[in-house]
Length: 597
Image (cartoon, rainbow, N blue to C red; front, side, top):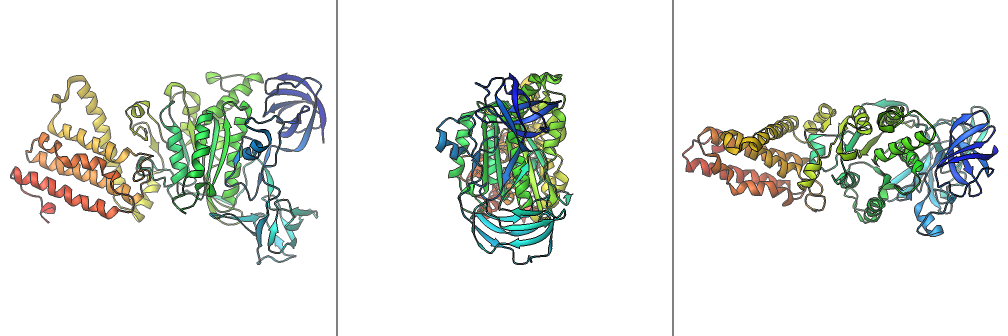
């Protein structure tokens, strides 16, 4: 173990004389044993970023290296827990130090006293070769998550011993392996892994299945795939946090990891209080049985924000290796980038765009590239889906973090301040948002829900685009300048906006919308639009059609029936036909063949 002393202190950046230390190694600084990481070496002088406040440190204080890089503990006991940015369990810290985290307080992330029910893999035999990713046995971590205990990714050899079924702590040895180099290695229920090193896998596969969130504008209009990369940029007050909470609650993933990176304390408190009360719609049990929270508020040490993102994605990769589809929500990558900017400034690095370091784009790319659908070392198909929130100052999407993120991700859910102020939630701007996964998602929707999905989606987006152009004309010269068809287009776009795109997170009926209900709502709104166009072509005044009471009910029907009552939604189509046929009879318009049938 290398031991040295502090030379200089510059905020969270500490320079020490520490011979023999390695770049990236974790260190303890000063008499309080503050946690830090070596980020630069110059001879025997090391520059350390400290993840806690450096107040009361002074030159000459002792520093020593721990012999390993910044890493996390991976094993049973992670799910349902709340950690800070460097994987310290906040609930245990609360019990020890009260409402404020004491400096230098290092508590093991995984509980050392809990006995886990280990069931050994009976297919393994002592003396047989064993490879990285092999399953030694299983532990029921929560009622919703069965936790395989795998051979770590960097271990290969021959199995020397394997314990019987029983109750074990995470520190007890459950297997012994003679490695290829001849050394004996004892394996426990957990192992450590460097947060800066992506976990290995056999090969990367193409993402093929949509991540269904139950949010219509996401699933139907701008889909994200399992193993994909998405971003949610938006100004303050646009509803980023609420949207991310909806995704975390309803997404059809096995494991959800929510990283609050530098966000306001009251927002994270709301999440920490609300999540344990939520019911998982897929299991009917507590959502926390498949959720893990990492909380790093804006008043916590700034460089811990930088670590929190890597801690979260490393844990996500671990559960991916266990065979699960994982969604990680990072709120927000802008605060993470601000930590990079502060550290870069204190190190004297050359600033570029808006003071950010030159490596901002490469760091963002490296983070998002840890998403993907892979074949794990154990042969399972699993995925990590990354969704990063971005908080551009003033809603300026041309600022560096947003613009670089936009070039990296395949799904971009742009939030609009104007829509939020109009109480249109989710406030996703359909003009600025995009998804590169539409062609792949179309196959799933066509095979499982409706072959017309892409056709309906394109028509609805075109209707919205036409409406935006016509709205500008109305603002200039008034609605009298529009033809009846153009005025009906405005009505059709309103049906799409209010009847499909708007969705209330607090409405029990509307908070979640199944794919079947999404397609039914969209097809009903387009059906009304088509019926109106037919009447206009027959000479029926647009005012007569626009005043139909049916239109008001159509905009609200999403909240009348749940996702399990799709048959009642289908029955509404007959009401539409009846209402429009009554107008045809009133104006003596010949019924089309489909209506007569």
